[in-house]
Amino acid sequence: MNKQPKYRQVADALRRDINNAVYGPGSRLPSESELGEHFGASRNTIRSGLALLVSEGLISSSQGLGYEVRKHEVFELNASRFENLTFPQNGDAYNTDVTAAGRRPSQTFRVEVAPATEYVAERIRVARESTTVLRFCHRFVDDVPWSTQATYYPDWLVKEAPRLAEPGDIEEGTTRYLAGIGVEQVGYRDEIETRMPTPEEARLLDISAGPVLLWTRTGYSDTKPIRCTITTLRGDLNRLAYEIGNLSALEEELLP
Image (cartoon, rainbow, N blue to C red; front, top):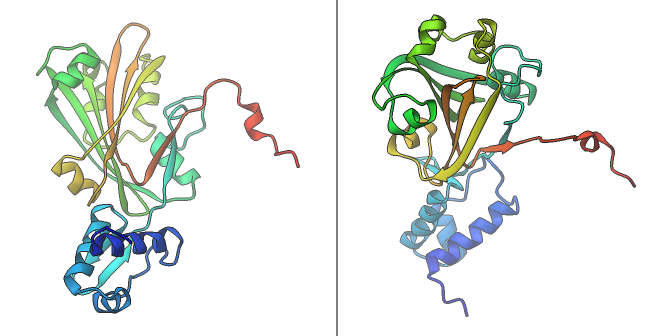
């Protein structure tokens, strides 16, 4: 005998149907009254079960349109090639990778002067609250909010590379721009963590449930750190990949 509350039984059954593609991405679920008849449950019970699936990010609800299975087209970003100047790029790495995956990139962009938070100051070795230039991108894949990227540059570097403070995007990408004026990034340190989104992150990334993936990359010249980039990605739509060492076997065909 199933001892779970009825609304959880409803949610479990619908979750199985979604996972088994009975209801595919973008398809609408039956109405609350139809589900109530199917499960022999009250409308309040059905609504509670559906609300649970909404909180899990499996479905979304729209006023007057019912419930729809959310689309989850995961984008894989190769983090070891990202900003690698030996990898052919047309513009910055984000546009190159998204386009190469057959998807459509777009973004909004702003530049501002911002004080260094303790988190940023520790990584680029400046005093807390000291002046930095923040270049902020709100990025989309096929018009779906995918990530935000906030890159902080220390004031001493901006004096050497004034285009960092200009309001427009840098067409060739900032890493190539800096290398072109003799400030070459020779290494980086990545930190990856997951956490629940802040209200602002949930708004920007259209997150109804689930965590964000926080990827911090600190870039170094041969003498000191030159920037800190904090990328916040939707946890349900992104995957990071790294390639290390000789991967010639990766391209080999599988033996029969």
